[in-house]
Image 1: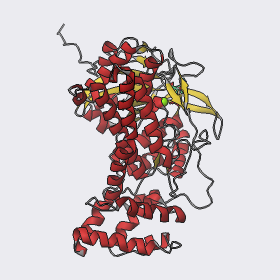
Image 2: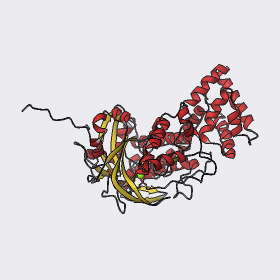
Image 3: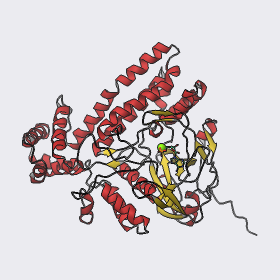
Image 4: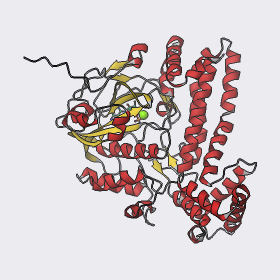
Length: 501
Ligand code: AMP
Ligand code: MG
């Protein structure tokens, strides 16, 4: 008999988290779904991760990405964490329906590969450990859209239907097709991971996690004379940058709990998220956010709050002297609004084609946003139409803002500023092109996502695939996608998202 070398494993998994952080997880059992079927596979991401896309894009992928057959070398674990949910501390949450298979080293570095919806774990409490197809498709679409927008985010590698149905409440309560999403993350360490052990007064565990997170995400902090303060600064910086980027595309996360706040600074957890149509800072989509805690305009405030909860966990590591530690942490929290303002101004300057930073930038941007708010102007289209104005066609944006007497004054001032920066009208066409390269035309608009997901639930994936193609190539106009750029027709009921689905 000829000797065959053993087949190389499909995943060259490493398990640095499991090996270095005992006590931060429990083993997760394999799933037992009756009829897993692979419905979406992200070939480009698979290749970035160094995976064998051809081998995974089929029945083998269905078995693996449902959780039924964790691949060779996987070591499926459910992560332990705590978290503040809508301001209330919950001492133990953890992965109630997720498993981390392991880490792979791809072109972009180390990435966690994890399943969501793969069954009950030791952290499931009353939950069924399942995920429904609708939310799985939403996360697949929106996380890939965020990536295409250049915003740090977990990614979607695959989606599988399970062959089982799950009962879900919400707008249309009932049995829904079950599904599993495969997520890829820089890591799934959250502020809540730190809170779990800090709340128990277990400083040694917090230190272990902080050292691990630093080595993995912020190696420069290790060399700092005050490494844990440097870690706090790095996480604050990552959150400030992230939320500024959300604001610049009209993204409302919807559930910025500390268990959904990634230490690596990625957008994490897409349950009730949505993109804003008409600009208003109080925009909320989530049915359970009646107080507007996570409203669009409150996101930077909440990011700071979450960073403060992270700081609390690090206090004993920051300085042995309690007052000293508090003073250093408080200074960092107090600096958050300035950190955020730097990123916010940079993002909106770029949206407006401005290249120099000037003293009155915040005022210029704020003036435009005040007009947009008064006009209930579509957030996405307003910026595209400003670029059209630079190309000589100011009619669309003026029509959109027509009630605002001072819009023409704003327009004149903005254009004067651009001329001052760049000069000639030829340059203005270049600026318009630069604006179109950062202001998306296609974002996952709620009514489109709903329609695509509803069709997919009945087995028709064509609308979903078309929308996915548009929002992952969001900047260049294409005739066949014209409808995807349009806001919801007037008179459509206010859109609501449902959490924990
Ligand atoms: P999320 O709202 O997705 O951030 O989840 C908050 C917490 O609830 C986490 O601990 C989840 O693992 C858990 N959870 C959410 N949905 C389920 C479910 N269907 N079964 C078990 N646990 C769940
Ligand atoms: Mg979560």
